Length: 277
Image (cartoon, rainbow, N blue to C red; front, side, top):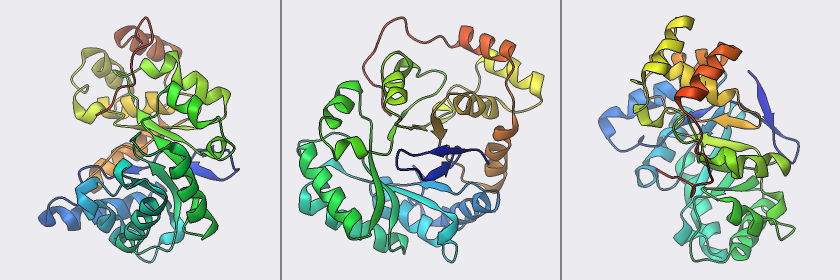
């Protein structure tokens, strides 16, 4: 398993497991838990969730999946912007920890910008870190201007990551945000690396996949993982899907592959507003 170093020195796997959409239907919970546990068996110890996902249901699924295996997990959750006040973020984190059955998070993110001043949210994160309830903090869905504002203060410069939408069809961050994050040694955590499945029928992607005898989804994930300073958190709700995601780590894209993908999915010619799903 390749690993990515955080600014504070800790490392996390470059490929993890997302949970967006989990915990919403009780009939699917056992399969979701089994998929996450199988991912741990395969070394996919980075698990990303949020209080928003399934109104806390995804955190409960993660808690069940990592029961007895907490030391194998780099655990990430996110706080709603409307809960990101000094007191609200602390209380939200405590609720997340109860649902997760954990005593700490490895990384706690502000899910997106809201009306609460960043300094207040950062104060809450610092309190949570001092209390041992989180080890690192960071942000999600922050554009370059947001990141520049974040880095005006000492606490903000300790942010460990920025989690954003990034895949072959969403390459706008390559023009501004990704270079900024690389310059400031902030890893990017890419969510929806296969665009929720919408890009998988693209002929270019299928041609490259056929050359490697793999699936288009695996090529899409391998492309994200080939980018410097980026990790990916695709969701997989079945054990077979988890195994396919894990196998994407072993794909080595050639210069020809990368050139063909670049031509088929070109980055925009000029900066665009940060995209979200």
